[in-house]
Length: 444
Image (cartoon, rainbow, N blue to C red; front, side, top):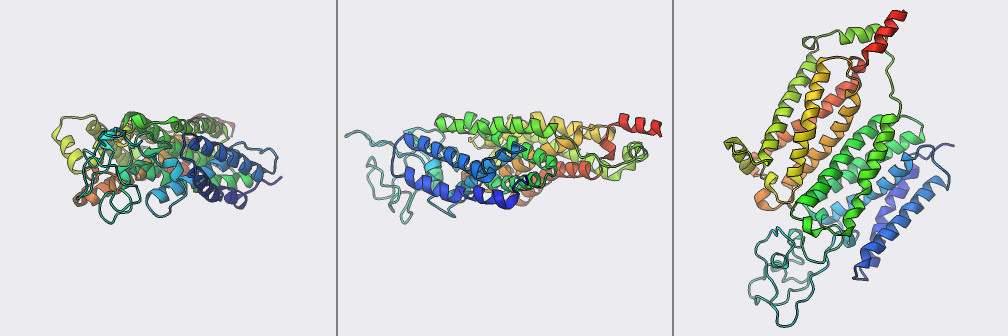
């Protein structure tokens, strides 16, 4: 039976829009701790219904199709979150990222007031918005929709001033600049990959390369997000809804094993051509020589930024973190985790990639170049967007006078792994195992 392609899977994923709006409207009527639990139950029921709708009750030949259908649904939900947090839409996902207002203090007690605009910890003394001029300190805060909160004429306080209200529910860390950017990436790039892979499954074509790119992208996104939540300034804001992210670790691991077990699409190359390509030295391959130079510069920049977030006392590190990338100092924790992952995992891969470009027969490089290309593309998109996003506190935003140099260096940093993956896919002869080629030549 022909499996459904894009049109059959596109409609169920778009059901996330009415489902999100309906759940938000239903749970908004009941302000209780069970609201999020009800949301999860209804969402799970909706996903089960979507799978049944797509499959017609039958079993899939490829179980990853079910995974891609469910994740495409959640990708649309993430896109809704990012659009709502940036103010383009409203009334869809507030129940998931909103905060429950603090309890009214007892009679006679003084309401804590804000110490600064950017709270570092979820304590009541740092959460209340500063009282506008003409109001009495200690008075009960005005409702969120009143014009007096956050300044005259403003309907509600800025989002960065309502992150850390106590007794919160949902995932308020999705309101950070990093959370918004990963939602954009998931709702656009991952969603496109899901549709492409579901179409390939429906047409019984190979989707291994797309899957490896998606695997690296999703793993980088969720690892940085979870570790940043655990060690950053929102670590004390974690709620049971944080456990909803665990499937995003288990599912990619299982999917990655299945992707690597799928057979590779080997090119039709003669042993002579493979031997001729692998017999060339590096100076006889100018494109590979340029790629090695790019990877060397990228590796050096990776090491430098790793030293910066590790508080290296060198003057160059001090100047860089304060004048070029102050976002690395943001206490949310995401940029520091990102740079440490670059230092301890991506930097060794760059060194191994240079080795694979110098010596022939490294058959592992094409697959892993796709994984790291997806990971670094996602990471750089989130890092760039978060550095420039208005949700990032002003002291940690990239200064306007270094915007172009900042954009150029980070875009080139993301471009290197993409060029490496493209080179491995376009001319794979240099990376084929040497033993089968030599055997084929002997048989002839």
